[in-house]
Image (cartoon, rainbow, N blue to C red; front, side, top):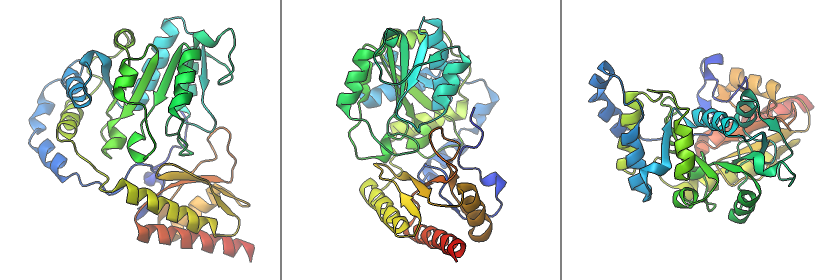
Length: 340
């Protein structure tokens, strides 16, 4: 596991604006909290050994069979489950999409003995390779086209498409049904991110029935707790929307990018989501992070530990317009103070 993910507020007391987590920061979840208060007696008993009731709710929402759904203890749990299953079913290699990307794909694959190959190079090992794609990609916010995804699926033994941030973009995504009806696509989803509930670990997999069957052979009983299952069902069945206006939210992201790009020595990259990478011409992301946290109570994501990035890279996700203005002004203060 990579040491140093985002949302490490516990290391910086007094944080008032958290730009380090990609999850929507202002979700209205009063209804869910009230519902769970009424279900607290559930902690007196074991949860379902496998969360079939939530799998059925997800299947009903997207018009597919529950045989195509597997609920896990967060999307990261699914990543390790897929790597384990791939290794047991004679896949020998793995590749990841364009760097930088989420590190757990490599960590999980290596843990179960898979050998890394160069992404997208068609070799003798291609049909024995699991390709991991983050779409939209963390930390860049880039999105693969549907044509690219189809091409990958024709070349590789298994293509794992992590769509955890699918509800944070207006770009077209592969549908649940398309993944369920494929031959070799495994699609990852994150209720944690869709509904802005990072404290409740709920993810799920959509895949062809035969792949779901293989994955079930390796799952741990009672892996998803009773309150998480209940929360997932309530959110899915009530069709909760946590981002009231996605188009406006993404427009604010572009406004924040533009403000940062006006600061000398700052380059904010393009994105199709609510988060994006920023590179400084000098100083380090760690220096900036510490300055913002201690002087302005603002937290950013030091992105230097993503493979392919440098000590000068950091990632931010859009907050309110007022918070975004504060961030831009604080970064300008840091840069101009250094340049004096």
